[in-house]
Image (cartoon, rainbow, N blue to C red; front, top):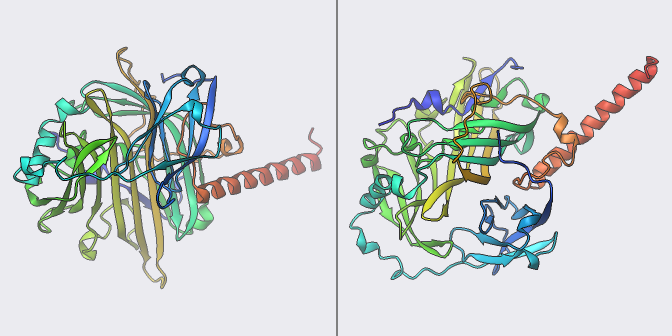
Length: 433
């Protein structure tokens, strides 16, 4: 069994008072479609709805406001887009029926009959969960896969963005049963940090894209469920659900006591046919203030205490043939920073998400050289020039930014333009050409 030091490998926050200062080919001929995914009854925006091109692995997801942009190679314009979300009936739409923009795609909640999902097949929810992990080699990725993914990371102080990181990465994802860790290569990235708003404390995410890839609990079960810890949870059946028109078991889990170093509560969504994990939503129990303080912090000054207020995680898988593959994950952390001899606390929110936008079985046995691989301890450095280019991402699919991120990007662009104008004026004053 693999054993990992959670504090060493999955440290989420890095804090310091002193500021520390081969891929899937991008398609050039493509058509872009944009729009919104909503609940057909309530008109509510649907978050993280999957949009996939059939007979390919090209996909994207809707953002927190339901908006999406999907870039499709011109040779695939006769294809269909599959729109799916847990708990909703799947829709399949020919691309020829979509406009280039302002599409509104309605999904309707699925009604799952109890008879469709026979819970009595399993006498206990715990036995079902154990079977999920026992069968992971059969149901989940068992070959090396080469993926392209979009990663976004934001840090907010109160409700104001202070740091924004976006990147396209390549992932060499090894089989779940392999002891080899997944490798990540930075393809292109941009990052901007407003250090003035961060004040005297610099909050940084250690690991970058690794913070989301480690949420793949079928590859890295040691972060939450091991043979030793699984019995420390209570598992109970909830109302069944549906994804991609397939029936899904819903299992709630909660730690029995506070004996574990890390106590999680959440839901597991399990395909009723294959018993593969479809999705997991869970949260770290931070109710015990003394126990949770500084829990997610890798490094900090001794004069600072950090109390996590929220620590939420999500991972989704997508079926291809008879196997399920890592598709999307996110984390959301909210924490309070208390500094000695200061009356007011500072509240920060850190969010990161990664969506796989294309992948293929690694039949060519491609590898990533050591110099190209990101380290799990990486902190992505500032690179603001990419924000001035409206076509920075080219043909790559991405998660459409919500309004707060769009506003932050626009502000960064304006600041860059002001900076360049100032430099031009200085050059003119100095007589430079």
